[in-house]
Length: 76
Image (tube, rainbow, N blue to C red; front, side):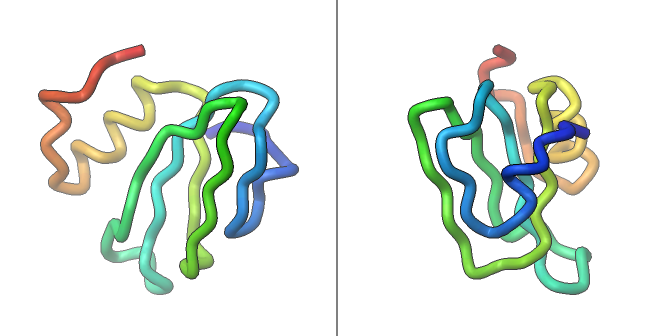
């Protein structure tokens, strides 16, 4: 997982490098959202459980393991 200390909350602002996130429900049993976050972007969510990844392939693997079809996603 990415060691991006500045992003360890529900608002990510302009990360130093592109990162990817998975947003979970509070029990971490259901993926509520997912996204890439470019260095020019901001993300905010009401959910508290967010994992950030600095590897696109690791992010895709987590999504796939949780039942999300990633076959149409671009591997950056």
